[in-house]
Image (cartoon, rainbow, N blue to C red):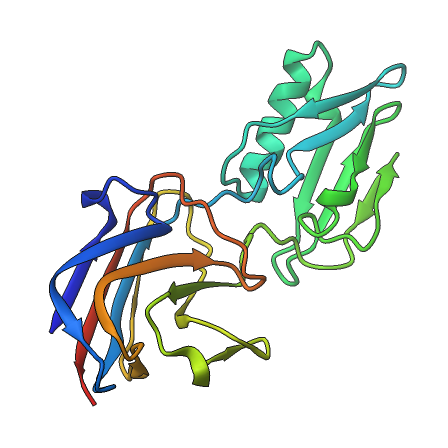
Length: 239
C-alpha cells in the first residue's frame, strides 16, 4: 500500500498530524512494515525567535545602551545585519557604525564597530555568530567558529504506531521512523529528500486505524513549521 500525506489538506499543524485510515491495518499477526520513500517540506522553521531566546541584540551609541527585540523569522547572516542596521536607524542612531565581513574560506565573521558605538554578543547569540563566549565589541572581533544560522542538524520524523522495541535514538527507545537532512535553503524553499534504499520498520502489532506523525530536532524538541506544508510518501507492506 502506498500512502501519500499532504499536510496542506489537513487542518492540523504540519509538524504534528494525525491521519485516520479508511482501511484498518490489521497487524495483530505482526506482518506489516513501513518504508519511507520520500519526504518533502517547505522550510518553515525559524532560526531567530523568542522561543530560541536569540531574538534580542544590544548596542550602545556611546551614551545609551539599547536592547532591541527582532521579529521572529528565518534570517541569513546578511539579512540579520540588515535588519539590525535598519532597526538602529529607526531608533534615531546610525546603523552604519556596526558592520561585518564574512570569511568565505572558513565561515567565520568579523564584526567591527566605529567608536563610540559598541555591539554586544549576548548569551544566545554566541553560537549563532560563531563565538565561544559573550562579549562587548568596541573595535573589531573575529569569531572563533563558523556562523551557524541553521537551527537544526537534522529533522527527525516520528511515527507513534511503530514497534519500537528495536529502535533506539540517543540510547533511548524511540519511535523515529526516518531522519531528513536540514539544508541552507531560505524560508519557504521546497526541500525534497528521497530514500533510495529505505529501511523497513516494523509497525506495532495491533489493529492500526490512525497514523500519528511528529517532527522534532536532535534533542527531541518539536519543530514549529509555522503552517508551511510537509509531504510524506510511505509504503506499507508485509515483511
